[in-house]
View 1 (cartoon, rainbow, N blue to C red):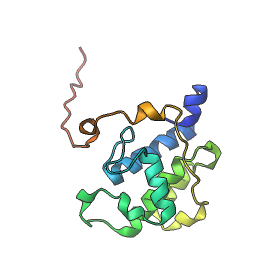
View 2: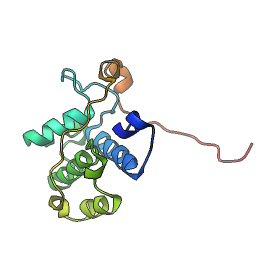
View 3: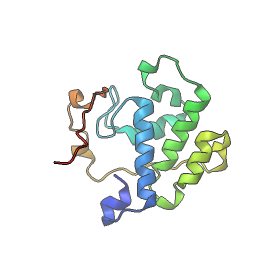
View 4: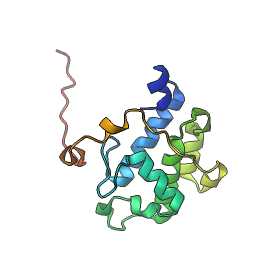
Length: 148
């Protein structure tokens, strides 16, 4: 959830960008945003992604199930876009046109390096989920689209 929504209760296009960044990071890592990172003390997905990005160790962020079946350049670009989308200041988040440009071309360096993501005020309870509820698995969903 975007930090400005937590503070004010107002959504905006930049709140959606924040959510997109979280989704990008969840897909790349195979982890859920609302869970503690395995083998990492007191850190959630946003913090973990930002820290590894700043350390230049962003390849550690990739879901091990991907087994090197990816382009390092594309993954680097996606992680940087994801981290840029979760910046605390909505004005520093890219707009959707910039995101599409960065994902479809090599022009990720056109925007400034991302700043540290927000730390939620509810952090202690945030990490209290059990690890079994945090595993991501593809599940088949059936939707009945006919009216009742």
